[in-house]
Length: 281
Image (tube, rainbow, N blue to C red; front, top):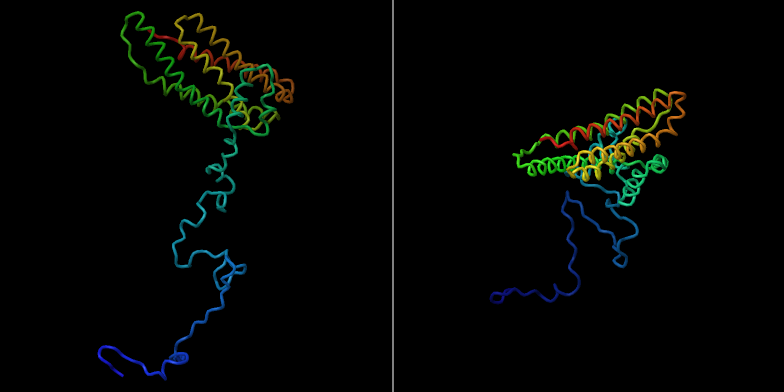
């Protein structure tokens, strides 16, 4: 029934519910289960959505997959572990108090208990930053000492950039090569030690050279030799005494091994004096 621009519905069609429309042939009706809105989240997962559900099969789940080389990746076993960050994470699991305590033990060489105190948790964090600090301290102090000597004698001075690369080669090379060679020797004499423990010991043994380099800026040659000698002897005693108890099990040749370790550490201090503590005019 039409009235103007409005459509009216007869009263008999309004009362009651709207009759359901039957599904056309070939279509499936969708039925919804009763939802309990009083409980959220629901205690029982309904339908296909569950806590263990992942992205759709046709979705790009690149970011939801474990990264290749991660601990969850099955291909990270065996020798492939050395190429992952997780393999080295335990050796950097130290805090400031641990590093400072180990530095303090390195300055007290007669204790000989550094290996026992770090046996359960040897670190590479301290040795890495000690060597890195030594590189820049050695280059900067040596440069400043040379500059000061030239200015006092009114001579022309030129900066030597090779000091940085030379210092990096000496300190990084020494801490990597010497413990590796010692590891092979100890293994041959049936007195094996962990390689990380040797890296840790030799890394902290070089800390004494940082204050020695700072004192070497004083333009007195005899004083520089004394400072270098004291630092070298303390560093050599620290390494030798900490390895002595371990190397005794190697038999009668343990004394030769300890003496070789001591002399090699002294040789390092002589090299540092001749090439870094020396002021060339």
